[in-house]
Length: 57
Image 1 (cartoon, helix red, strand yellow):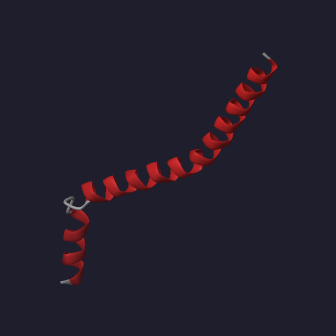
Image 2 (image 1 turned 90 degrees about the vertical axis):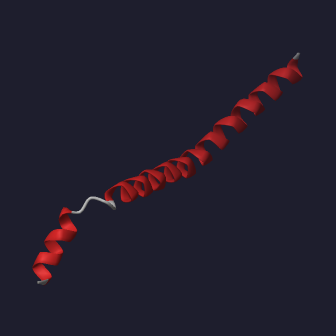
């Protein structure tokens, strides 16, 4: 009986869509967190270069 329930559970695909969406969201949030720090550093460098060059004009 437990084996039949386990087989049915493994064959059901109703929750797969929800799991896939959650995994995609987790990956996207992770990428945003990783690249947020790098983008912040890059933008700070760009703005400091712009400020330095504007001061020389």
